[in-house]
Amino acid sequence: AQSVTQPDIHITVSEGASLELRCNYSYGATPYLFWYVQSPGQGLQLLLKYFSGDTLVQGIKGFEAEFKRSQSSFNLRKPSVHWSDAAEYFCAVGGRGATNKLIFGTGTLLAVQP
Amino acid sequence: DAGVIQSPRHEVTEMGQEVTLRCKPISGHNSLFWYRQTMMRGLELLIYFNNNVPIDDSGMPEDRFSAKMPNASFSTLKIQPSEPRDSAVYFCASSPGQENQPQHFGDGTRLSIL
Image (tube, rainbow over all chains, first blue to last red; front, side, top):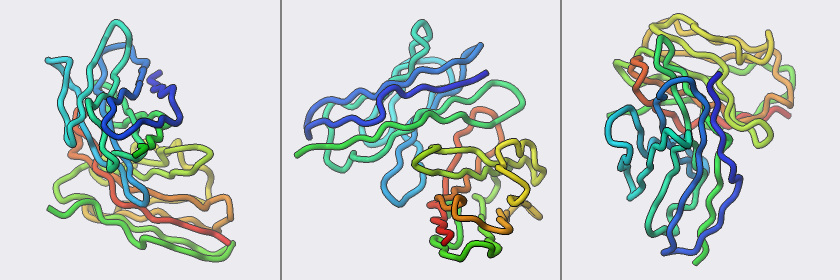
């Protein structure tokens, strides 16, 4: 069965510091992978997605993520965090086949210190 | 482009009342998803539709919950009778329907059952 693990519930970084949010998945084949961001009072917004090809994918707002098959990981990174990046981040996995259902991780809440 | 539109944004009602949440997906999207988000359980998929047909309702918590999609541009999630433990944020999302396409989320309905 598909599953997604985000081991960090809460992370605090200083503004301007680099960021890496971890995501591990369980799936029998190469999955589709997504990162979403949720600001308070809003819905989830797509940051980036991986389907195939280049394992380093670029997203909006300066985010990138790297798919590592050997580690079953899809970690989200940003070289320099801005205060406006404070939000909750969700990793999601989708399967190849008839369903287009996504399985979401439990989320990582990012706080940014001035 | 108009995104996924949910109404109402906030709903406060008394226990035992019927609650109806509404969703208008993005035009041309063939799949529609209803989620519930709480602090305790995170983001849970309740039900999803492909081409107006319910495909997987295994996440619907109990018979008090029902969802319909009478046409491609409208869906409802109904709770009858409502209970305080139904208090949550309910999200609707839509996608084009292909397996590698991301879901686009509405801003949610914050439901409070007193």
